Amino acid sequence: MSESPRVVVDTCVLFPTVLRELTLGAAARGLFRPLWSERILGEWQRAVIKLGPAAVAQVEGEIAMARVHFPKALVSYQPALEERLYLPDPNDRHVLAAAIAGSADAILTMNASDFPRNILSEEGVLRVDPDGFLTDLAQKHPDQMRAVADEVLARANHFAPKDAAPWRLRALLKKGRLNRLGKLLDP
Image (tube, rainbow, N blue to C red; front, top):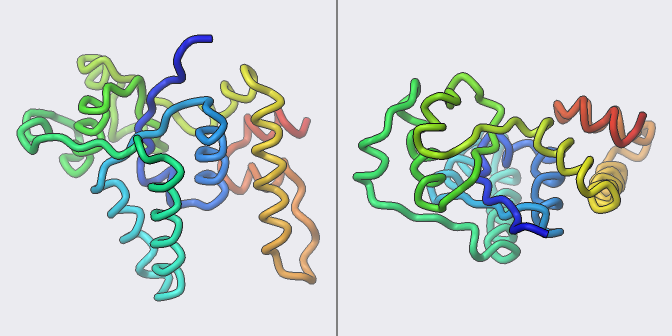
């Protein structure tokens, strides 16, 4: 088997719970190697401030666990690398800089317009969307991805209100904007 792809995980993938748990669950099984920078982790933390102190405390714990589970994920780079890059949104250059510094194969993001493929290809980096990426992993590693999805579903049902109807996998994945993955795993 070839080496697992190295993939920078953008903040927009880390923030939503279902998407994060599926993505990091796949990484925990060695299906890809996640990469991120301090700035990406900081953006994730800042994204929850509006949800209140309990959410901030929770995300701090999640970030700490991500650091423990993926100690080689953290990428650093010199500011000059970021400064030489161009993207439509200058605030996203740090993500591309992390990809270059980490020798990433791809950036996993939902923000297609912020990461034009022609610009990324000049740096030897692909842009992949979470639904396509996770669906591809599920096609290549069906048993492992099914196990990840079942774990995420079990957690969602465990933490759901007691009077709520249980989640079905396809509905949960649809809520997480993972329609293709849902159709594959729960036809």
